[in-house]
Image 1 (tube, rainbow, N blue to C red):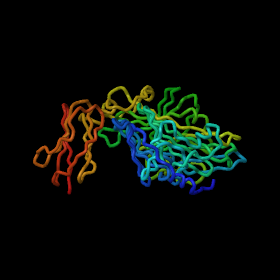
Image 2: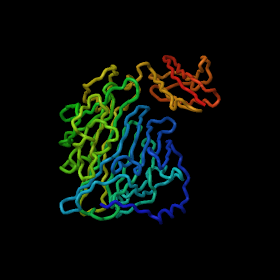
Image 3: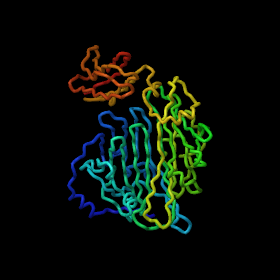
Image 4: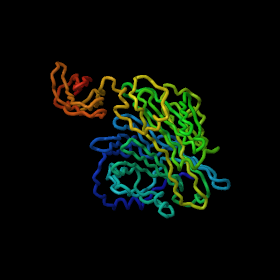
Length: 481
């Protein structure tokens, strides 16, 4: 596939004549800076955020060939889940006599149809009405024959009430790739990927698509009392549970066994299961796709296999070279694939695993535990204050202000393990209360973000004091004018 860079002048002129529709009533907060990395920030629902994260549009994504719609610093109910999640490796192989093989790219955005695109300078973000985003995949699933559905490029957000969906659309020659991230209130994540085509060049020949998800889980990192992350393989058919102590790669074997994987905080005994979808299981691994999963040690800046060749190369320094995973930051790779049948150039294949939260019912002991039960992995219960109690051994968490030093404002976050009435106040160097920052009822485990306004105060060192029915803590802030 030859990489194309085409400016569609007519489409651009058409946008100049388009009247931007009125913004929909949103139940999320989203920002965008179209030329930045990350591109924006999302909080949902807006009144009491369950999910908060940053995102990067495909055109600014990391890696040799880009990595699609990236997520950064994904938090569920205030707990860090994923440091980064994206798709840095994408390839395709044709049947013998077809069109060969390709290592495709994921940083070229294609047009899609959306409602409520934001005006400049946020024109790469659309507050789309739920169920209205249309891509080439949607055209083809509806009996169409390729083409792009619209001219919007960037990220579209749809709010279904109990589900939030982010969508981006990408092109690589005649191929069209769609990536969606589905977030649910109960803690589930569905990373969805689709393979389709806008023209019939070669796509009527039988071929196999593969996309490799890179999940950098950093469960509860940065919170007091969290333990090391572990990667487990679980076989429900036999009840076996295997923890990887060294970098590993492999396949799910017999699909009837239902093998899945889990990343788990050893101390809080909570984490996420990576469960293959039925669509993924339909395309077994072969000499081209090579692996269904890899558990590797995190190396800063290593987002792919460093190769421009067609098939993935898992046995390189960036990926699996038998390093220890004990006490290390781990990254989990997962392959999604689809067989594109010959004679059907307009096929659209939808794949992707499900990420399911789990936690152990028994309270944490404060020590690492390497013997999880099968029932723990099958619990499908979200991380909550009770499961992460080990992260608040004193019954509260009062974070360092950001930024600090500051002028004229900064933000302090706190949470309590048990629901209670609390006060957050600011004191000067002489011990005088100069401001009450928060006063009221604090829910268990919920992060409260409090703004500190120093515009009417002199420069100096101040103390933020958290006081409740069962907690007391302090942190220092420095005001410099």
